[in-house]
Image (cartoon, rainbow, N blue to C red; front, side):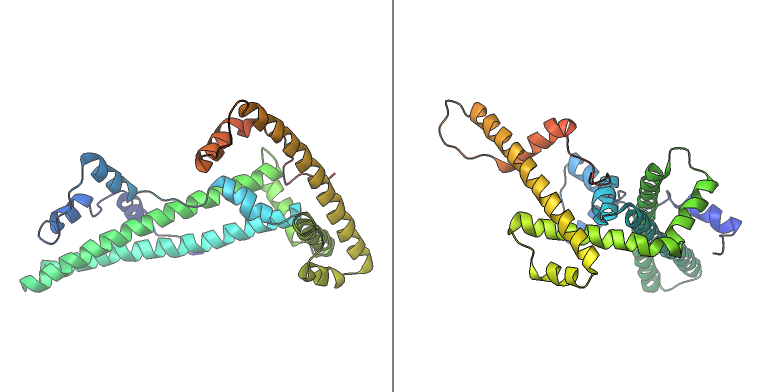
Length: 291
């Protein structure tokens, strides 16, 4: 990939946090169109939101993106694929950002010699739109960087604390080695189908047609492995859910002792539990061995 020239780097570094189209300008323009009255708090919050970005969190990427794959090898590969996707987006966003800066500079140059006041005013509006675009690209640029950094942390957590280039070469060899691929794919599909079948068993009591059809495409040995793992996992879940249910019943009985039947503020109850009990969880991490 071609690197930016020194002038481009300087332009990016000086422009990233420079002029924006402020909310006050929009409020001022609206005075003659449809006045918008905001308190100081409202105006401050709305203006601040314009410079923020809200991408996927590390927790979301770790548990619902990377851990959507059910074996360590596949999880690592998924993390690398996610980095690739975001890097491509970051590269395109960076180019779009630079093009926007160039468009702003070009229009301002054109305005210097323009004498038609209407044309000149129209160019001023173009600059305002471009300033909005610049802020959008800036936010997306920061979002891509933040998400890539989060994914890198996930990979390094699984690779080791003090990773170096030697660890990188080992990781690349592990992911790309063809001799590993078939064995890892067998593990992945056994684990994935077993998970899906165990969900069927937990929710309906029988393996559903789609998962059964997929399982029957495998070798008899792999079919047996899927069935065994699905039965073992669903049985363990059932037993533990039963224990948690019994403990919850005792807890609720104590909480409601002396009170009549009642309903609850669902959001309040769930939020309170998440805030006050999350540190006491004893559930096994999804990236640990089944045994």
